Every structure is written in structure tokens, then in C-alpha cells.
Length: 364
Image 1 (cartoon, helix red, strand yellow):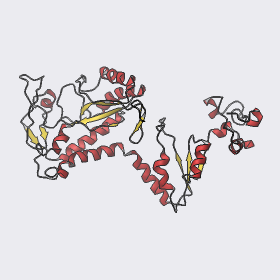
Image 2: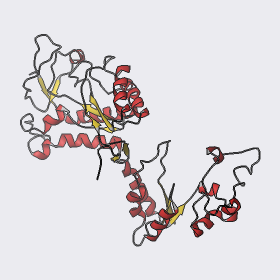
Image 3: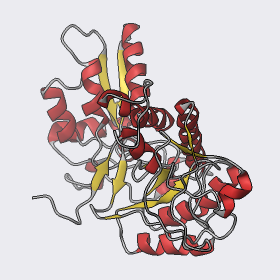
Image 4: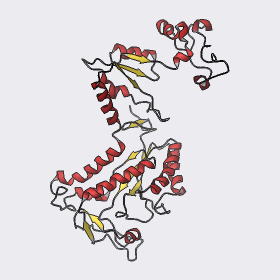
């Protein structure tokens, strides 16, 4: 039975400590030019420190034409990314993950709000259908949403602003994007607020076009991550190689999530009826695991690397252990053994005892 506090892998490899997420909340605390400060760093890091699996950051404006509230964050240039990087860095240090939420409020704005008034941008909406209600508590008289609306002429321009904002957010080291309460996106799907007659209005398919195109450009920013390697493996297979070595080790000091197995995704692209290319795998496979995969014909070859350091091949120790069912010896000398040179080149290189020399037939 799956447990609430059980770890889970999100998407192509975002390892979450548990299944509890902190929802998005607009708090109006980005007081330094709509950028996070140390106050925001502390707020998010404190929530991650207690063990929250995933944090959805507050809605963040993607461009100057959509800036509904003062002291709400924006994300469209390098300085914004640098400020957010301080937040994400602290969240990551305590084991948390955080998602960026791109936001465009569309018609849910008032032209007298300071940022919009300063920029001079019109208030864009799917159609000239004003929103009801609203109460702008920072404006005199507490006015509601504006009736002074400009219909979006080229939706592609705003789609590009979404793409740009999400691209900038990756410089801030966010883990992924969350497309949620973006008022503009919602209103384009509505038959009431969207009365357009072009390819973005009318039918259900047309009204859903904008959010789907936004999603597509965001996917291109983030991945999908497996797509690159799927293409690469397929191209390698076209070249009729003798073998392909598939590793489950990460890179850039980032290990793959514990529950992610590349063999599941990419093995069938290499091992299939009629394939002449052998599949080799590596990184922390056990003998039992390797034997099982070979017997099932899911792999052809398996690589052991560091075990050959501690189980010397000069006397065929590692193979002898496999043949006799003896566990591999473990490294009892620490990580320093991996690299040299030492004063004596043989040190930690050719001076490892076999299990027979150890006098322990089941050493390890």
C-alpha cells in the first residue's frame, strides 16, 4: 500500500521525499523590484526544511503587460532569475524541490495599478469582455477590474513571452514548471470570455489551442528529457553497432533517482527480435541482478568497475567469487584509493588480497 510520506519520482526524474506538496500562494512579499529577497528565501527554505516533498512557487508574472499586484514576483530577465536562484538554492540544500509558476492575469487587472500605469501597456484579454468584480485594495475607492480592454491581436506573442519567462526561470534553478491559475489561459478556454472568430476562438478545439500551445513551448524548454536520448539511441541503432553501453549513473554530480531505471525506457530500443546490437549495462549492478537480466535476455553484457579494484583480477578473484557464490570484497580503505599516484605506484593498485589470502572464503 502506497503511503503518504513515501518517496515518489515525478516525471522523468524529480525525486520527491514524500507526496505532500505546498500549494501556490500569492503573498506580496517581493519588495525589491518584484524580486525575492532574503525574506522569501527564509520563507520557502523553512517550509522545505521540515520535509515538504514539493513546493509550488507563487504565481510569477511573465511580462510587463501582466502585473496585477504590487510586490508579486516577475520573471523575464536575468536579475529576476538571480534573485530566484537564492530561493531555489536554499530549498535544494535542505532536500526540497520547487516549481516555477508562470502567470499572466489577462483582463483581471486595473490600468491604475502602479506597475501597469508606469509601463503604459494596455490590458490584454481574449476578447473585449470585461471581468466582473474585483477590489483593488491599494487604489483609492477600491475599484474593480478594468473595462478598458484590448483584444489580443497576436496570441503567438504572449505564447513567446511564456516561453521566454520559463527559459529565464531555468537559470534560477527551478526544478520544473507548474501551469495553474493563469487567468489569461483560463479565459481563452471559456466560451463566455472568448468570443473570437479566429483559430483561437469558437470551437472547443480552437479555445483550447492557446493553453496547449503554451504547454508545448514550455515542454520544449524543459524537455521532455527522455526525448533526446530516445532519438540518440534510435540513431545509434541505425548504425548497426556491435554494442551500446547503457549506464544508470547520473552526471554533473547529480545521480539518477533511486527508483528510475534507464533500462526500462531504453532497453527495448536496443534489445528486440532481429537486433544485432548487444546491450551492455553498468553502474552498481549486483551479480544476482545481472544474472537475472541476462537469463531473461534483457541484456547481453554487464560491466563491473570499482569491484575490480578491491577484487584483484591478477588472480581472477572477482570471477572466482562469482563462480563460487562468494560476495565481492568491499572497499575498506576509503575513497582515496581510486586515484593516484602514490609514493609506490603499487599502493592501492596491485596490493589487494584475494579472499583466499584473506583466509575468509566469504569476505566482503
